Image 1: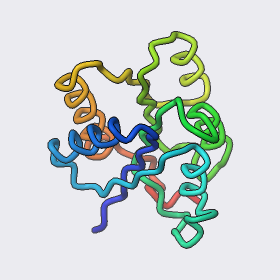
Image 2: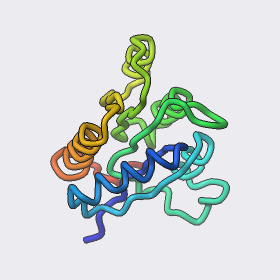
Image 3: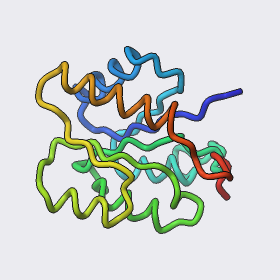
Length: 150
């Protein structure tokens, strides 16, 4: 059985490296696909542009989404994910350095499944990422239609 990937949407290369390291340390078996801006995230999810050859019916097990992204911000990406019947139930975890209440409220209003603030210190950051990865990729149960939500 092939495990569905985790989609990481992160434009900061340092945060990306820390997130990947923490997920590997947590022994997450799922492949991790990385995109670095909001437009590329949507192209990936809807199998368009550079991702046109990807099977659109095979969605990631979870999207880990930063808010501050080039081209389209995380809230715009989340809004588009929730607007499409094919992706509306896809688990989306907001992972951001923002501590602004307006971002928390907007994320949940748009249908985020979780909002995680990036801890400042490395041990805290690593632990938070490991828990996010393990929960959403290994413990959480997707809707009955699984990853083939059409």
